[in-house]
Image 1 (cartoon, rainbow, N blue to C red):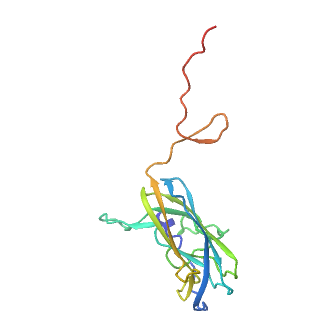
Image 2 (cartoon, rainbow, N blue to C red):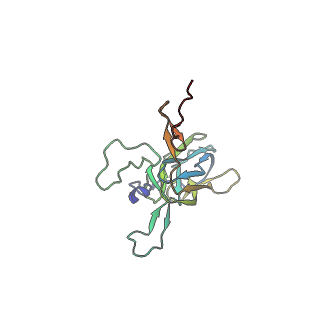
Image 3 (cartoon, rainbow, N blue to C red):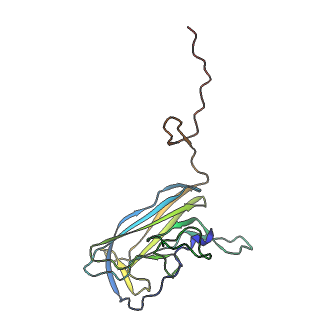
Length: 206
């Protein structure tokens, strides 16, 4: 499943016609649950708005913290996942994946750049949602850093209204075990906590 971690390193191409410049953006939503648990799927959502009067050539987001570098000796791969990416931003391809791809579809926003997803041109004042469905696999407190850009080559920059680069971070605490739940036999719904123990008391005799 480690291959799913690299959902942002697929077949996207460099844009030779990407214009240099600075494009104002606004991050309307940056949402990632602060409390998570091992093996419980969750979503990271970023909604980006073009706050300027020019079309953004290719709105992109780079995440640098879905993995960590392990110092454990003799590992074949030193990069280990904190979150496994099940589905990345963009429409999922309708064609079945080839044998060399990960089992889960990566999403149509994958690019040739590691951990970078691109969702194309963004018209003035329009907005675009980047959504990752991920599974946490390493307990502890971890911080995800994101950077919004206006292109994939580094020539088209995205800046906030105050002039700084469009960057931010979100911190999540991952519990070492999933929270206990049970199915309520009366409603069929999943409820928090362990299954209640049936009462062994006998009804009082009349």
